[in-house]
Each structure stands twice: as C-alpha cells, then as structure tokens.
Length: 115
Image (tube, rainbow, N blue to C red):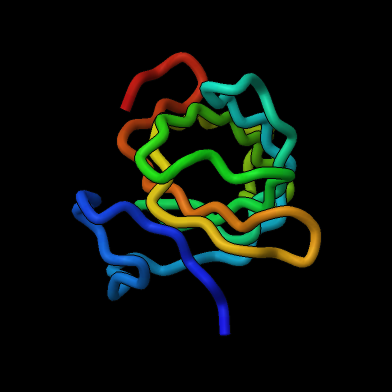
C-alpha cells in the first residue's frame, strides 16, 4: 500500500477523480523549489497536472516552477516546444528512487507567449 502525504487544508483530496487524460511521458525537468533547483523526471502529464519523480518531496502546497522541452518529433512539430509551468505540490509518496510528487498546474506559458 502506498503512503501519501497531503495537507488537510488542500482543496484536492489525496486521490481525486481525475478529470484530465494523463499521458505517460518521461521527460527530464528542472524544477525550481523553495530549497533550490532539482533535477526531476516526469512520469505522466495531463492538462491539469504532472507526476514527477524527484530526489526529495517538497511540502504539500509548496509552489513549484518547472520547464519541459517537448521534442519536435514527439509532438509532430518542426521545432522543439518549451513549456514553463507554475504549480503547487498536492501530494507526495515513495518511489523506487526518491519520491513521487504530484503537482497541479496553476499557470503555464509556451515559448514567449503567455497562456
């Protein structure tokens, strides 16, 4: 059984019913945390959140900023696409190497255009 840490005041339960399709994408990510930058890997991504594997887990509700680069051949584009996201940790639990960290995406922008 997986142990999950959440915050009682968090608006999202530990295992919410997912409303967005998740895609199993394993991409390197540089995550900015209050404790400094961390190298992470995405496990899956949706339009509303991302699951990372990281060496440690920031506290629930901690703000994160991360940048992902989607390879052109993966998304059918002529050029790689960079997406920068701002979000917060909604849960974390053990992983084989480090911690799994679930984050909700509060805002993002692609390249130079803010969405």
